[in-house]
Image (cartoon, rainbow, N blue to C red; front, top):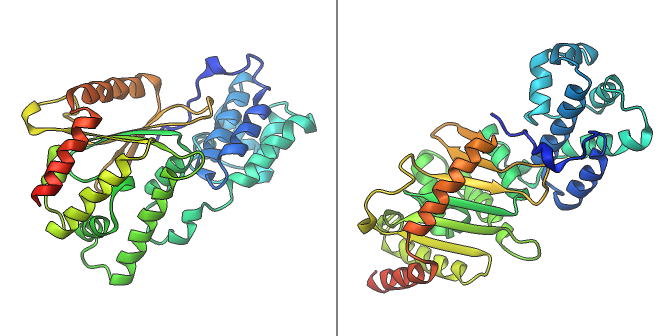
Length: 311
């Protein structure tokens, strides 16, 4: 998984101006330890490379392997404050005023996210996504099979979850539904997430859960598209082939400039995260083309209204 390469041109040239960045991130990402780990890993990688220290040597300093240093720098694992302190000393960061923000970031990065109580239901690769989703300011997504999770009504969410967990007890199904609806709070209130979704016409034509569930779902989509921070476009069948031939994906953007855009593609039992600029820029171009090919937001809303009337 590659989710830690920062945009270097947005940073100070001396590489030690990072503490102010941590202060800004701590301000907007409470409860998002995934993103805090990524940011801390980014700063540690920058400090290490500026000193010309290898991962092997850094690992030796904290009694670990070079592979662990790699995982720390990518934000894939939690940090021990002692290890961060030892690495900072190795990298020449000895001033307490410079060390304190980074050590504080390490403490906060280890705090459990709100989704911790659902940990028994979540694979580790999806916990990463929830953390990123919780800190994103904008998500652009394309879906060709299901309504995006952030826009699913409870009945529809329940039907989707049953497809993947048909043998699960009812209590587990309901917990999974609550997890999904809790994630949707990101679309409400101050600092609400901006969501821009392009969905294939098949998504709303497929009667998942039956007619009543689909009526509820389309009503919910119409309600959500009335929000200023939610845009939905429908890609009609008559457009034929389009730019997203490879399947569904999401692009997450963050308010902190030290964090790169992340492209997320979910698979059956895992997920792929891409953050290299060349990769994310390519997916952004695809999303731009999809937005041009699909019906406009206003026409998409009329399409949903007409579809609702026919059910």
